[in-house]
Image (tube, rainbow, N blue to C red; front, side, top):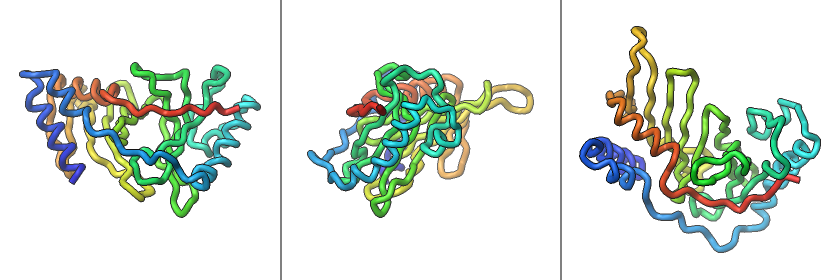
Length: 229
């Protein structure tokens, strides 16, 4: 139901694009903040300590062990990161009482100052499960509703826009919306909205507006940063 509502909201945004650009922004990016418990179970938070300890070990060693970094979900080894920039945050992103772990770079931020998200974890049977991993060509932004917006690119001509949510008690992300742009065989750029397996065309202007919304959601979630040291 929530997926349908988001799709309908974005369709409404696209239909009103030319007449009221401001309405597009408000329709697609505002919502109700996820209620978060005042306290999280310390035993659940402790389940993430081995990951946080390994991140701290790699940071202290200034490690160039690609396999060790990738095991944490960090695909791009940060060889020249600033001291104190890498760390983590523990946050219940969907209000179900189960904390999630984010691996972050606070010196690499978007326009609203949200730290770069390298990896996102949740717990399944009290064991960490990686939900997603991100890098410079596939950036992720988490809004106050617990929706994850990603902007990716596999080439100069391709751009992919996706949104996800972690439903209460789930151990994998649910795919909510999908858009992409690429060049056809004739070299001409095309723009698409994927809706229940059907691909509907978009204009360049509509797609560019969506890129702006996905790169800069109106209300980003805030984290309490824990430096890896």
